[in-house]
Image (cartoon, rainbow, N blue to C red; front, side, top):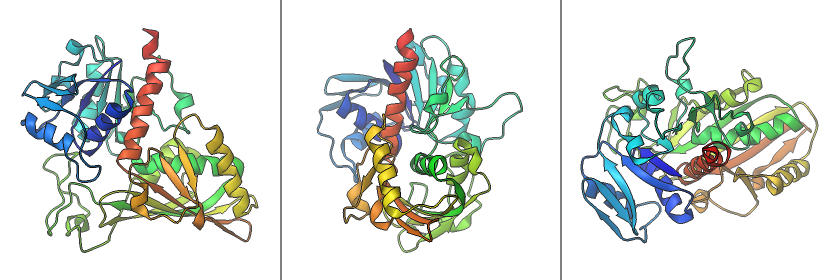
Length: 357
């Protein structure tokens, strides 16, 4: 199966590295606004978080060759400008983060292109008409893949890293114990639109727009920055029964990688910490995808760098008070873990849909 990637940022390059490592599919086309192909190759080979890619990379303006595997390169501004079908691309992964691309994604569904997978949650931010949703279905493995209909769902979302981590865990708790209400605090590493010095925080999604949450423009390194987040809205899109029962807060923290969610819930049924651990151990043992992993090792955030799981449950902090008041802590590599989920979703599409061609 052939895949195209639009957006050669942190997620796009992580997806490529994972594919290079696993051989999950062929990346046939890469598109990015960066006009310098050698720069694109350099950023793939040398990464400040994940280290040097041990591969031979050759490039010119029109293609990149990594250990003999060729990918056609384009430097175009819209998803509709790239000739995906000319290269027999089956699935296009939109990791650009630009909402113009999400809005136009349906227009490229022709020829060989059967699916578009968007690596964010456009339903939370793009106004939709009553009869034309931007996204047909959101897939988070362990939560909503069973509702995927290959005949009706063609523009798909992989949601966001926070919801990918939270929703499988909350689903298990809701199904088995019921969630009365709760609060979630997310700690998320800095992102590329933040600055080292105080400045306006420019949006990648809407070029030229400045985020109205002005503290995001403050210097990244010296402060922990509280901010609103769409993590819970994206989670409740997958688990609508939780809408109105959980509140949230997010902090942007001065670290480079690995996020965390601090979950405090009041459950409907009585339980204990040991029962919670046993419940998630049973789920881990039978899960089809790399949804979550349980741990009680004395680790810190950087130890979860490179984890392919959507969430790592740190059961050192799993506490139940009074039978119903639950505290849990999750860790997740917001780049590698999320990109691993995207790769697995493409493998799911191949198994369910593309393989029928």
